[in-house]
Image (cartoon, rainbow, N blue to C red):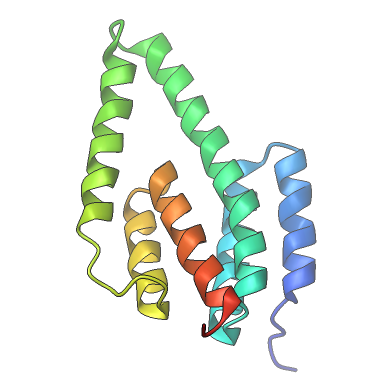
Length: 138
């Protein structure tokens, strides 16, 4: 018997359950698997819905890391670390070259989020690109 790929619905049910039990790593992994399926199918409406729990899982993880950094680093160092990540993500976003609203832009932003997965503006840019794709040709 061959390997069956879980359906998007079952992946997202599992991702939602993981998020509810604060298993952010599991939620993220399931969302990434679902995103790959939605992207391959060019199902941009579903892709957009998957981005929300993915971003939430990453937001929680970022906050947990910041809280731990604040406990273990000199005062103010955690804020400096977070600011450096913001600046890096902003520079990555500014360096995007793929046309806005294109599948190539989706791939470019996904690549950037693979490097800096918790950057809010990269997530927002990806969501905006996918919204454009979901609307279809003007």
